[in-house]
Image (cartoon, rainbow, N blue to C red):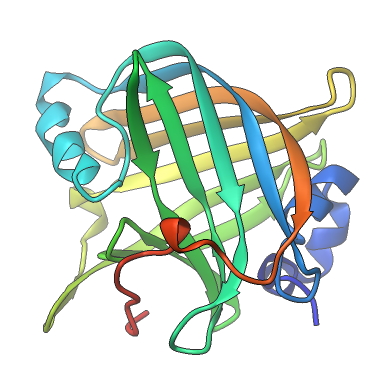
Length: 222
């Protein structure tokens, strides 16, 4: 078996920089987790009217409403098998913004040949991800269809009412660091949220994710 990212990307996975292949090779087969620490040089948000939406997201560890520079952060990617039997990888980011801790929680699975990204503490949002490789061996991730699930309620967001994320992650051999750049835009309203930073990684043996990184509820619907 291979990681969920390699299975989703197929032969394109081999075009990634070797360090990105190891980072996104995290999975139960590899038996290791990837822990990154670094600095977000910039965390930005859109106009004032975007703040209420970001604050609502903050309550369930989805996005960050703050604006700040040079923010220490940590990202933890642990593989585990969720209660529904799906191989899952955590993408939990923690930020220290002026002494306040913020979290952005995500857990990813493979479904129907593509990555589905569940966001938040209760996996309320499910987002399809498109993965591509750029000319420098970097990973370009673009969000696509988005669904909301809460109890018996489930519906798909029309793209005009939601944000489309584009993330680029690359490894720079000159400084030995991973570099990440994310922007979230609405098709009509423009820029909503973004961050830019760099980090180093260490890999540790792991076949389970610590309870503190797992969502409080696992959503069966995809």
